[in-house]
Image (tube, rainbow, N blue to C red; front, side, top):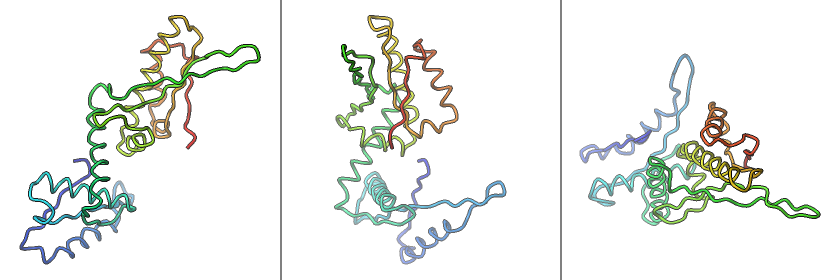
Length: 226
């Protein structure tokens, strides 16, 4: 799946296992040529042994995934063997990845938008002027804090569709407030750097404004401090 591959070394070739690993690593030390340019690609490998570390295909693939994740976590471009005591943390990470992909394939209803009031404190009047839209993931694993799932969404390349969903929902909510008793309310929406770098970001914002019907001057876009 994606850019992941499974390589099986048969029993009769096991004596060459170390050399096979080195051969694969050596391939990635050389550049790939594409349209008259050189490109370098790194490789992270997770290694497991059968039947020591599992007997079913699903168990072996999962543990190979865990080992590969640990290779990436250690700095990428390296080989890591499966270690049992790293299981819990890595399995949680893999479960989060699986559930985030599933949540992103549907209508994004697991990603809830919360609204934090923005209050203007004047000398004579304290008044709520609008709100900031904050995303929360109410997953099948429970509530996952943004500090954990936002970096994961960026890593998986899912931050753009999730961010687009939040933007549209926030605009629709603000439009409802404006049509009701809060005609001057504004909505603040965070954009990650990953979103800002997308070539269609202007069109995405334009679509959200047009679909929701919000007054564009009521939408405030924020860039995170990091």
